[in-house]
Image (tube, rainbow, N blue to C red; front, side):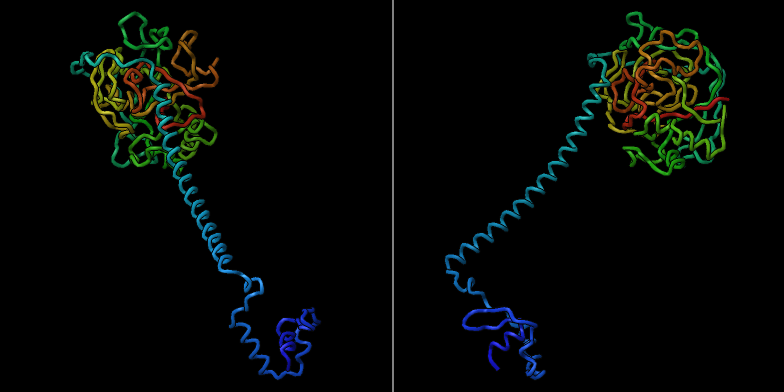
Amino acid sequence: MSKNKFEVCLGGKQTVGGGVRRTGTPGAHCTHLTGWVLALVATLCLILPAAPTQAQRDLTPTDLAVRKAAEEERKRRAEEQRRIAAEAEAARATQAVKLKDEELARLREQLRQSREPPASAPVPAAQKAVTAPPASRYRAMEGLLQVPGCEACGQLSAIEAGEFDMGSPDTPGDEPQRRADEGPMRLKLKVARFEVGRTEVTQGQWKAVTGSNPSYFNNCGDACPVETVSWDDITGPNGFLARLNAKLGLSGDKAYRLLTEAEWEYAARAGTKTPFWWGSGISPKQANYDGNYVYAGGGEKGEYRQRTVKADAFVANAWGLYNVHGNVYEWVQDCWHGSYAGAPTTAAAWETGCAESRRVVRGGSWFNDPQNLRSASRGWNAPVYRIYVIGFRLARTF
């Protein structure tokens, strides 16, 4: 049997006169070979390395060196690309942190309305809580809203009907760092009786109703205020209030709602006329805010916690409400107006003639200067806006 016949059997080729031509069906010239020879040849084809091609045999040492260098260069470039990709990913992570820092800086600048007063501003003497007008009482919320380890979080305070002066006086020296949007004052504004949560709505309560927790400070715990929730998240057709009232079967005056802006200030003041319910000055021992700054009306520097704290932290006001000054801003029902000119003569929500659909927030936050924590201080945001300085408080009519 010739070598050519073997080649026909294995690859369908046959050498003729030094050239190679394609044959017909592979194995056509091997029909006379015995089976064991075919088996042996097939096995050798599988285990023996292929013979180098003529082109490979013709390579000089220099060619081989060039090829090796090219392969090493290819590997080097691949490694360089992996390194560049890793550095790019690290840069993106660093940029994300930088953007967060820039967002904080932007928000601080947006919220700050004045410069820090001199550090020598007088420290207020210990303030006595003002005795409440007609007695307020506490009532437990439904079981769904109970928060283990925070009794006040699951309670409502009954706020008796009354009247108060809403806003701040514009006479020089009466209330330092006031702003024009806090006037003209709504004098002897009548407020009907209502109930209000003793604390801001907590992360535990939000989770019990919605099954999720959007809070930025979600490691603070179930007794800390929920934040990073928009006005729409709370009041929308499938928002927190709608889902809560549906679960409890509540409607009409019995349904939970947001406070109106007038109700919020009435409850926060608890019968007082000073910038804060305890008096005219403030320190970080009394509320959660940026303690690097001193209120012009009196106070001292102190701890800047840089995060939320439990909803029942610090001392409650005379009507039993916690953290009406600081911790998180609180959405209210009203839309934003740049002054109280033309405001309703009752404490009902003012929702006509709104400025660009903005909604009011009250109370200041852990992030703010102390002037923004005053009872009269006002702020606003778009109803779709979510950020880690805004939460809310429940209310209901009865």
